[in-house]
Image 1 (cartoon, rainbow, N blue to C red):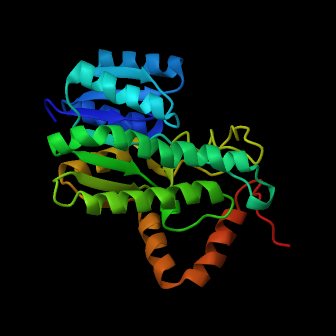
Image 2 (cartoon, rainbow, N blue to C red; image 1 turned 90 degrees about the horizontal axis):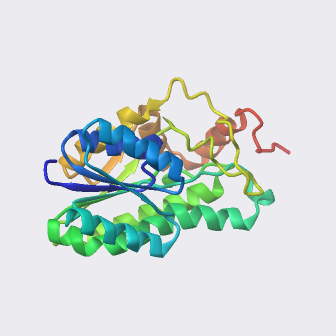
Length: 270
């Protein structure tokens, strides 16, 4: 990755931070974005002291102008873009019946439109470098999860966008990689939105046995090097995608039962 430039949106925690670290340690110049200035400063200092060439930008993935700013600043500092990792994302947890529609808009603005904006402004430079667009999707982009309607919808939309884009760019030598992590230990569940848009604050799942963000990032790094098109992670994730194709009705019941067992599950059996 020497002389390569990698942008990671939402790069101050979880999978995004882990990706920035592994690409940076491999020699790439890294650009990270986030909305929290304190987290940006902390991450910048950590990477800088580790010898990683890093630029930290305060930017909101859901704001189109912030994405254009991100690309302009990257070019100003490093002169090129080789990899764009669309990682910024947010989750939610509530049944649709009780969900404030503003929550759906917010989730779509960050998870889907954030990737659209960043890719739009980065694409001419990725075509020039014959680089890679990465979208951090989810198993929820292949199998809708009850209690996560907005999150699932955003990831299904992201998957469709990336697949169409990958096909459009087939002869321009830009690789498009869709990443579908299974359950991964990160902060996304802590910051998940509830039915009224407030933060959940605590994860409803035991994360001790989940794949770590660091391990997930290593898989993503190798997939970028090998210019893979699709990366589905964890055995549970791969099995979920396969079984949903083969036995969709049975999976409705199985997935409902699994999600219903979460502490304080919003799902109802009436």
